[in-house]
Length: 97
Length: 251
Image (tube, one colour):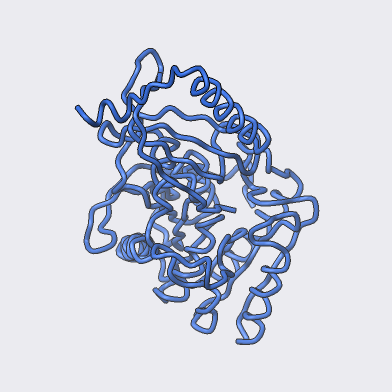
């Protein structure tokens, strides 16, 4: 089915699309039909820059297990960096101008 | 059935039409060569996008003697590959029902305006397009036959409704003005076999002219040869039943 389960989050980052790095300012996270994965449903993340049109997209499609592991891994890496006192909140720094 | 000594020709191209609120959108149209008259068929793409499968499906109907048109329901969302545009619409939670019904109405009107189209027009949709097809048949009331393939979200709980999908299509069953055929995979989760039962019970309750075909060993989207969901045997049987239904009700 088309689940229409989708969330959007504003982000600050860069993504590599082809040979180019593009500014990505939104992540669209869905659990719905993937395009590339041979699964009926997948956890899809599109890092996009809407102002640059539909092609400005860095996409990943993950199995449920892979997505859960990725979340845990990101949290673990951030926790370790925090513990070492090396976290830099560039998003806030950028927003502050 | 095509015979090897038969002449066959087809023209297929991108056109524009007036959709919802008079907006210009594009569409893919295919028709057999000749004066006709041929029945029409509106082909509705699924949520992942206006992709190659629907162009082939449109040509398939033309090969079988229909003037078929597939409107690009994501025209307003920009242009790029069908995947990129589909991903953008997916992130936005789909397109609003009213807009889709307006675009489908525009496609229907275009078909009916063509000199080689007979007075009959059907509608075919898969997945979210199956639901849109059911809604279009019930609400626009300008179709002579409905082909619903695994329409996801025809049966919806109140908490599943959204501003873009504000109604459960099943609630409009009483208004269905034309015969319908429904194809479903018994391994599908949406519509699940239980939801298909509810869909059928409602059609039965209102005395509608329908036929449902349920396939074992098939899930969602078993016609899509480009997806792992493809099931050759079930798909070929399903196409046979769809074309026989259309032949009976549209020709």
